[in-house]
Length: 270
Ligand code: NAI
Image 1 (tube, rainbow, N blue to C red):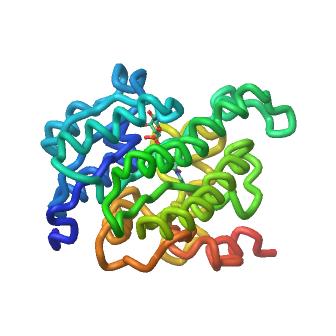
Image 2 (cartoon, rainbow, N blue to C red):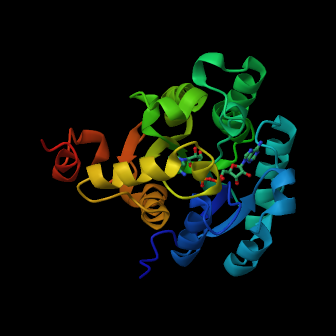
């Protein structure tokens, strides 16, 4: 059921690779809620992803942009304003990639070139996006930027390797830039800390399936789905959450504040 919460708003959605992507669900939901959007992804992802199907479904255009490239991002914000006919109201940053994870390299043996690449793609890209948007004055007042993160930024999850540190940086940029953008243009910047979700990036993590089941058994509400995450994004892009900024918001069925659940206790019964 749609509520027209984003009627007349213009947005940019990054990171929709295939129908499992969290960004895919967000693109669908924000369209249902009345927003017009531009989709973007890395030029290389265009070749093996399904983004054009999503563009057709949401009646949107696709602008390729490598999120590490300031010129690409400048083009993205300029063209999006042209296509959508005005300044941007919301941006979803849904970009994550660690070469160390992809290559199964243990955290203590991290390759530093890969580490730097992960930082650039998954954290610094948010800074670059916000900086470009600010320089171009591309966002409307009370605009909203949401980036997706994971709780490994606060607590250790050994399999998450360098992405834990990278997500900590992403959340820090959210606070730091959120201050400046709030002061300058009342633009709000938040992260959503999402449950494990079965996507290309998620399932690429070693032992993901086991951990997914563990998190589901620990959380009183179970794991939050990509669809539920998209609903949460809609609220943060809407005018109903105008005073929320610089926050890391847990969207995890209660996982982050649960010590143990009865299901897990049962496994250790003597
Ligand atoms: P996904 O694999 O569908 O999305 C990741 C996206 O990042 C892809 O579309 C990919 O093409 C894009 N990307 C990679 N390098 C890029 C670059 N240089 N420029 C532009 N785009 C680039 O996976 P998912 O899970 O939807 O990931 C979205 C976000 O959600 C990521 O930040 C991820 O860390 C975060 N997240 C995912 C969780 C999960 O369990 N799946 C849990 C918590 C957070």
